[in-house]
Image (cartoon, rainbow, N blue to C red; front, side):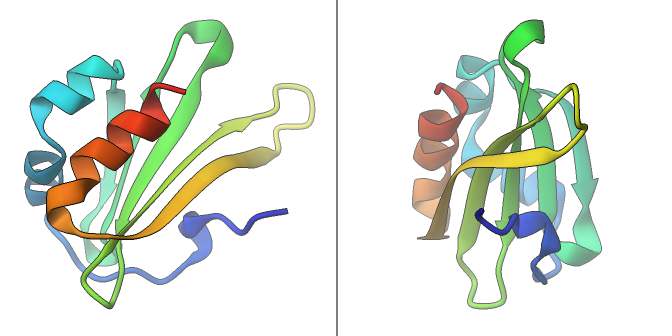
Length: 105
């Protein structure tokens, strides 16, 4: 089982900057909605997909000034969050492509 980036310490980041680096075109392309942010821990989370296959995408700024991006979903029966895929060590100019790639799965 993969450890979620939700349980990893991040670095403070403004969610507006993170969203700007991802790009509005990439967010719209993967159907991003229901945004939640935790600026002191550098976390931006949003939902993608249709209601039946609803998934969460998490983007976290790490202490080494790179991003980690994760996509996962919650099992409706057990209410357990399951990590589907992760990418680490992503620079600001690549975070949009990573979100699009993982969000479109």
